[in-house]
Length: 121
Image (cartoon, rainbow, N blue to C red; front, side):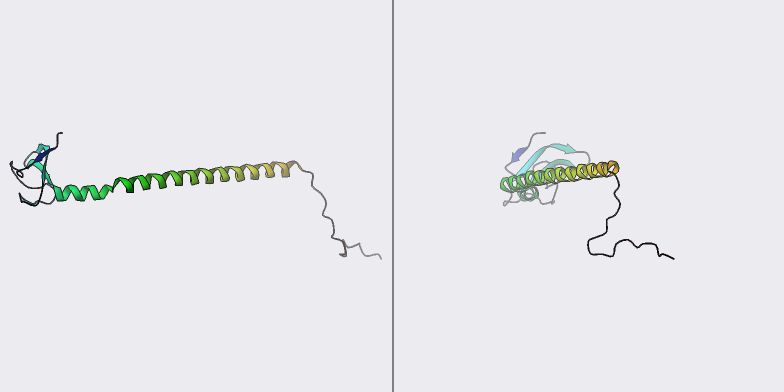
């Protein structure tokens, strides 16, 4: 597909912008997209629609800013994943140690009445 500038406006039918339908006017530049659509004709876009399309994609500065933000978020995501991995490993380690540790009898706190002795008869 070869895009060319149609300086005099669209000359082949339908002679309108494929997007907005405007016809040849003095206030627009026309771009012939270099292909035809069956039962429609030659495909043209006017400069107004090209500008609208460009706005959808943003300026180079906006794209660069978004790419920088994506990289920042990817780093934050990687740091979060590393923290999750560390905590999961620590949890597994504690669970393994707890499984093999000998179970100690509960010890009464100092100053408490301690375990009750069976009542003597």
